[in-house]
Length: 186
Image 1 (tube, rainbow, N blue to C red):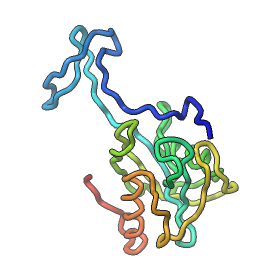
Image 2: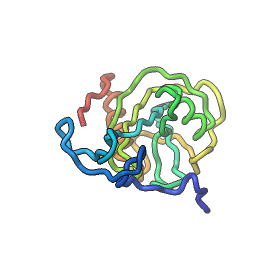
Image 3: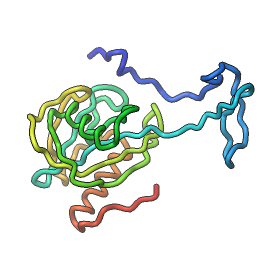
């Protein structure tokens, strides 16, 4: 399988030059942290995480997962989710990503939780997950999914792509047993 250019993995790198004026950046102590700052203009590079959103969809005690088609984690399974576009909310991102990856239309039921993902080589991610139900559509892989499927919560694939997804699945199992939403500060 050939990977289209837009899906080739670009690992996170540090800037060496200012994206505004092209002058060199140097580390300075700002706001109690060492941050790259421009030597000529006022630019400070705040290395912020990238927001992503997705849906936890459970039917008959089975969790909907998608198998990744592109790096990172080709062939690994994950919760349907993806990066937010600049002009969309987390809810709109969630609905769009589920539709793109699974062919399903969903209804957001409630916010589940948010997770820090630090094992994606592209960036640190803030993953916002919602509990959702399917309202329409036909389950089929699309966009960057090579397969889709519902898996029994006690017999999930061992190759879940990201730590944030693994934490969410662990929290989901507890939630389904206790009815309590997770609380994490990690």
